[in-house]
Structures are given as C-alpha cells and as structure tokens.
Image (cartoon, rainbow, N blue to C red; front, side, top):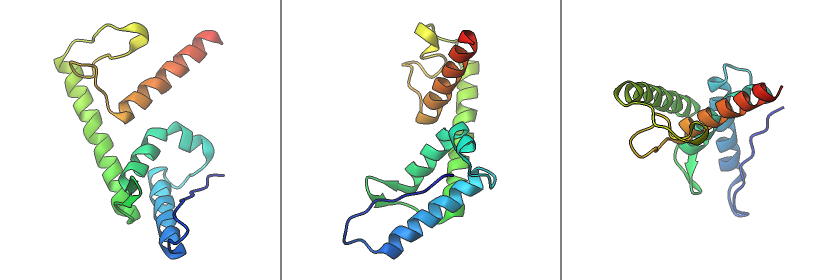
Length: 131
C-alpha cells in the first residue's frame, strides 16, 4: 500500500521517470527489509527522507542505483548515530523546553534524522501520557 511517484516536466522521457521510480522503490524495499507497508514506512520515515535526499536534489538526479542509494543512506545513518553518541558522552545535556536541544551540539543544531527521531519520541511520550 505504498506508491512511489515522481513528477517531472511534460517533455521528460517516461523511461527516465520510470527508471527513477523503480530505483527508489528497490532502495526503499532494501532499506525496509522487503516489507514496504505503510506502518514500516512511517516507523522509518527518517530513512525515507534520507533516501529522497540521496536520490535527487532540487530536480537534479544524484543517484539511481538502488544498492548505492541504500548503502549511502545506511552509512549516513550509522555515522550520525556514532556522532550523536560521541557528542552525548562529551557534552552534558542542555536544558530546554520539552526536551528540545538536548545533547545535539553547542548551539542545539541537529540533523534531519535526529530531529525526526526526537519528534517521534516526543509524540509517543505525549500519547502514552494521555492514554
């Protein structure tokens, strides 16, 4: 129940758009372990956003090979996790409202994956407190 859609100019070749969509879907399937259902996609939304970022930028195609796309997303995610763990050990947690800016560098800077992960944790925390 997941669809991959690419929008391009009217003069763009359908073969190019089909190749982009197939590469994106194969990389997505590889990242999700073969299960591309709605719940799996929503649980791993940060990986999906990183995949889109590696796939194209501002309408410019950066990569179409599904194996390269998946490996670059996983490598980036592992590097960010390692960097976050090192920063957390080296720097004390900073105070802030509702957990914002905790342990993500001096100025509170965080990557998209870290921000999405933190937002998901906050939503789950808020829902569990209400229910």
